[in-house]
Image (cartoon, rainbow, N blue to C red):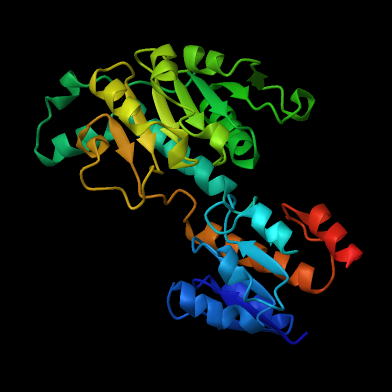
Length: 327
């Protein structure tokens, strides 16, 4: 093929092997620097990124560029889709690669909250075997899990929680048809019903102006005192100041966060001081298996575009194809 593909960050070997098998030269950026990217992208036909953002001024340097690939699901931290579309660039992603990994991580967090695993683990290290008297531990079987966002991750979580743990599932997603969902998901018309009824509320939303501060003081106050909030989507979906107050004042029982409004999280973020929140550093999708799948599927999209095939997972295929056909 004689194509060149720029990797903003290194990826698993599975994707690089696919590129080489299809005659592509792989160019790995030595560092995540905009000026370096501007130089390297000039003679590249595709670029692939985990978290480095390809701004408009970088993309414009790619005179041969055809496609931007995202190593993951949400493309907002890699490229602005409207900008890419305006430049006639396809944007591909890997929506199926991490759904099992994120769903499993979410279930792990639910179990950690239900069983108070973190404070009890600390108690065990102190040989404090009276600590269980101070903490409630709960079964999750029969409890209600409310899932906001029924895309691939949300539906996978619903399947595992219902089938594996006998949880009742409530779901909300205005973009999904009820008839396309399994019977064990009970859809609600008003998202606030999720907050009122669920024992665990799990967010699986994209980043958008409409979803900024989606969970705020009002919605937190709708929740049961014993309920927990889980955010494994984007930090901007939750008002962290409101969540801190709700957790500190026991408006809700707990929370689990894999994402934050600012990443890396600031050392003075008050959420870090609380015992009723389970935290992880934006790693729910970073299992070895998921990284292999994201690398391969992200490069699969690149190869499909460069071969002139319709890509399996493209967010702007029809728009860009129409622009290119007009010349």
